[in-house]
Image 1 (cartoon, helix red, strand yellow):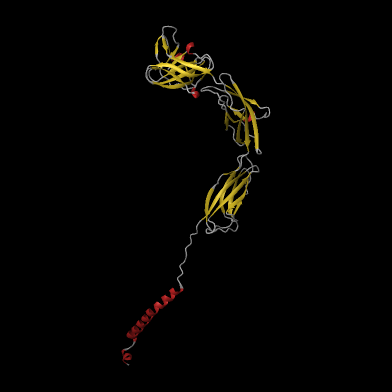
Image 2: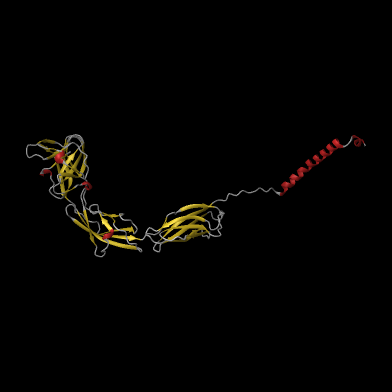
Length: 391
């Protein structure tokens, strides 16, 4: 890993790197790096990774979105795995000043103590150059940036992200919040990240009757001290109740009794309003269902019940769509319950035709006569004396 610190390799203006020109003596990957002085150390700002092939001189044009923003006083360096790939040679005139260390995995944003950890470079010249162009001035895409959010978001919740045009790769943009003349109290409800541009909730919002409007000004300043200002307009909205247990599907029998609870659901209003629910409709239309709920507040239980005298019939209607309407006086929401009627599972007793029993009776007559005759013969044989038989 190499760092060049003399004036030849020092950035002298606020700009960005458009290309790297260098010679290399074999194939491999090179990270071309930008370092920024930070006390006695240097901080790694960013780098462009390039693959080179063989021995050659290369001009690598950096794609637009990877052109590193640099400041006056930044210096360049590079690293590669294993051997140094950038061509070097003896220096006869004024030589490069800098440091070198064994390959190191310093990450973007980290600082490194080159003075104590590196070895000074003496008498060596390196074939490398960074080409620059003017830094692109930042600007917001529109003069007003708008967002709509629920009025019940907790503190710390994400609202939106400021993304001005013209912010270059690795460029730090600083944001300042200013009071809007028409909305003097809006600033206390929001926090804007000084360098991230992320807007979050800083204070619990006032409950919106239907909606509330907030606005403040944001000024962005890039590394070249170019500024851009926009109005941030945020609208908070009262949200409708949430029917937490719907949609859903249940099944009941034809014999379901009257006033039976069929299904219970929780209804909650995220904005903190009181909720009331009622039976909106059924399809097909019927009087078999009613809605019951006697709780009050922002979180309540409501039940869909069978009416006092339901008439469920699988053959007539085997399914119903029941709609529950919940209202917080500002907005409404609807929960849907599908009620299926189970097919009856009835056993039928077999009843034989009338002639069946008659035929059984007639078929038994010969058997009865034969049995009777057998009994007469048996009695006569066993119990009638021989004298009577001869008379």
